[in-house]
Every structure is written in C-alpha cells, then in structure tokens.
Image (cartoon, rainbow, N blue to C red; front, side, top):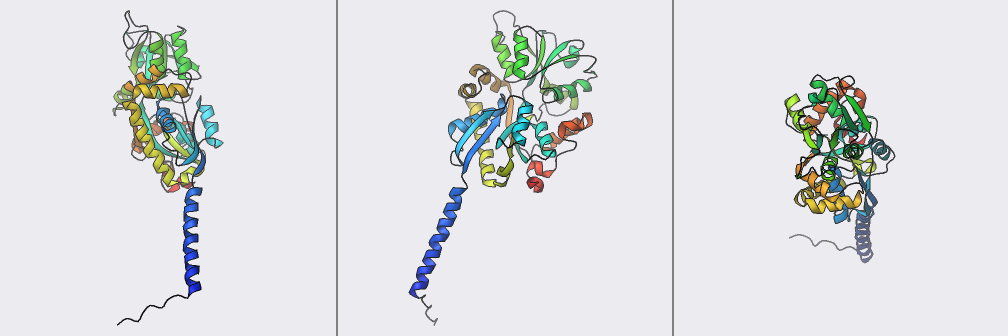
Amino acid sequence: MQAPRPRLPGWSRILLHICVVLAFLVVTGTSSAQKLPKLTLAGPSAAVSNPLIHMVDSGALADLADVVEFVPWRDPDQLRVMALDGRADVLAMPSNVAANLYNRGAKLRMLNVSTWGVLWLVSRDPALKSLADLRGKELAMPFRGDMPDIVFQLLAEQQGLDVRKDLSLRYVASPIDAMQLLVMRRVDHALLAEPAVSMALRKTGSFPLSVVAPELHRSVDLQQEWGRVFERPARIPQAGIAVMGALRDRPDVIARIEAEYVRSLAWCRANAESCGRAVAARIDMLSPAAVADSIAVSQLEAVPVAEARAELEFMFGHLLRKNPALVGGKLPDDGFYGGAAAAQ
C-alpha cells in the first residue's frame, strides 16, 4: 500500500499557482509581442508581384503584423537600395540580383522562384523568327546589365551573334519604357517582359485579334530559345521572392509567407481579370486587361528555392563565365537556399 502523497502547505500551493499564472502570461505575452508592427512587401511592375498584392488586399497576413503593405520598385537600382537599407521585409526580384546581393553581404534568403517565362521579343516584322534575324537591327532593351538583358545576351552569343557589333541595343529604364517606344513607332523591335508585352499589343490593336494586319507580333519566345539553345526545359528561373534582415530568423513567419504566396498565385491564375484589376489599382502604369492577358501566357509557378537550385545554378554558372560581377563573383552558398549559412 502506497503512502499518501504529502500535501503542500497552503502558502506553497498559492505560490505554485502564482508561478503557473505568471508562466502563462509570459508565454501568451511573448506570442503577442511576436506580431510585427509592419510587414512591407515590395516588387516590380511584373507578374512576380501579383501574389504579393493579393496577399495584402486579401488580408492573408493580417495576423502577422499590425500593418501589411505593398510598395512597388521601379528599377534594379531602387531595388538594391531597398534591400541594403532594410526598407522591405519581403522583396520580389530577379534571381541574379538576389544572388548578387547575397554574395555582397545583404541579409537575404531566397524563398522561391515563381517567374519562369515572361520574356518575349516583340517586333513589327512578322518574318522575324529567331534572334539571329536581328542582325544589323536596333532593339530596345530594358534594365541594362540585368534581366532581361543578360538572358538575351547569353542566347545571342550562343547563336554566334556579337551583341556589340551585330546589333544596336537601345537601353531604356524599364520594359514599360521599351513598350512605349514600340507604340510610338520609335523602334521596330523590343525585348519586353510581361505584362509590358500585352500592354503593347493592346495599345496597338494587335491583341487578341486585329481586324486588319496587327502592328506588332510576339516574334520570339526567349524561354523556347533557352530550351532549344541549351537543350533544357523551355523555362528560365527569372524571378522570385526573398525575405530580408531579421525576418530570416522567424521560421513561423517565413512558412506563412511561402504558403500564402502559393495560394495567392493560384488565385491570380484562376481569377485573371480580378487579379488584373487589383494589380492595376496598385501600379498605375499597368492596365487591368494587360495584366489579365499576361497571366494567361506567362509561366508562373512558385517552386521552393531548394527545388529550383539546379536550374538556378545552371544559369548562374553561365553568368559567372560571362561576367562574374553579375552574381557577386561566385555561386551563392547554402544560406541563399535556406541552409546552415542563412544567418551570415
């Protein structure tokens, strides 16, 4: 027969009760304190930003922060300032820019690659079928030294073109600027990223069908060229989202952002017109119809960065051989992909 368990004196039971209550308050208080005062999502006027905008509009992250906002960036220079100065918590960006920033010490961890096919050559010439057909012609090109310029140069050189001698590249600040040159008939050819392609086709009556001969044509799909030239799948790991700064140390927040981005991307693909209206309301230069058109023709899939690593490193390897500065002088290490070095 077991001896009866001794009862705690009255004051001891009271003290134990107080300790339990205090522990509960500490735990619940800590949980509440973990809610962020503000969560800033930032991205360009491109498809990679569509899910971020829907995440803000739908309140998907409202329980994580008191204020959740979307801020557009205009060009890669502004993007780099935002990344290095800590002006955003989640940044949508070209994958090579993410690698470059990481290798130069930015507190960054890539989460996914979601943009795999938005680059097109748009031309007034219906006979233009390949990059080689551009020999001797002028081409409007956005974002000098960044996407899509670097992809174009890789593909052109693989086809025997010397971009400095065989082409006349007219560099402009953004795909929208290149689109405007096409619409105003100041150039006949431009390399554009969606939704600028759809904007150009809409503005000239070339999309979806024109009563008369269309003024502009989707002449070369750079994703198809990538697959043909490199004998790989016809898709390019062009852009995705990254978490910045102290947010890298919040796996709970990271997991939510990843999951909500996937859900919002699926919503945008299933509700292109509604997504177009939401995006155009946030980014003045875009029209709802062009955004909806672009969703229908773009390769958009949120692939976790670890699963996209082989395709990223294939592209980064070519960029390293062409110009090491494009990716910060080396392949990014495991920390870029969420591994042990992530807290560098």
